Amino acid sequence: MKFRIGKPPINENINVLEWNLLKEPKSLTVTQVVALPIGLICAGLIFLILHYFKGINIPKFGVKYILAYFLMIPLHEMIHALCYPGSLLSKDTVIGYWPDMSVFYAYNNCVLKRNRYLLVYIAPFAVLSIIPTIVMLFLDFKSDLLLLIVLFNALSSCVDIFNCILILLQVPKEGLVVNSEEKTYWKLENYLNART
Image (cartoon, rainbow, N blue to C red; front, top):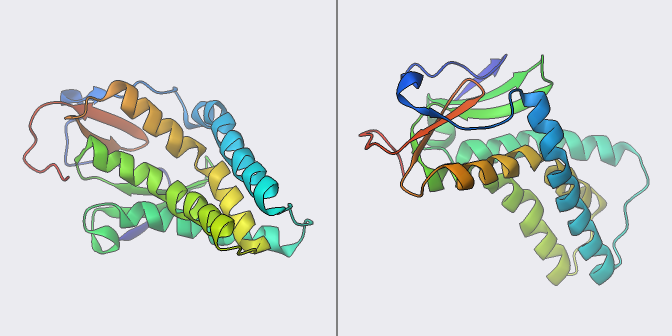
């Protein structure tokens, strides 16, 4: 695994002219604006469920908010990275920060089957928002810090969930998916190095 400052790297392993560009908003900023309602709905539903069934309330603003946010970011990106082939040990896996867009990201230049890409995108939402919500509901466990991580992560997962929707709508089940820089590409042809 490598660390990078700057936008995701160009994928030297593919010729993007041989792939279909996923139809998505023209810029990351537009993607974030379009996807934000998804994050607000997810975070809002989680909070409403926890409040209704367990009486959990939003804690008063304080240091816990800052701590939760800065714990959530590396956990979120590490979970993405763990889902790539070779996980954190792969030379193809990159954890990065793109200062121009003020975003952190996990990136891998491997060609993956569609469903594996969906797993990469949705895993942080499942692990950091859905599972802890279930734990708080059924094990009667309350933690302000955990609640804030759950809600921040649900909000931050909006682009991941939006990308899942785009892939499900555009890429057939047998399709292959790959990234180069911030763009996503797909095709149906057999690709010898595709990972499941």
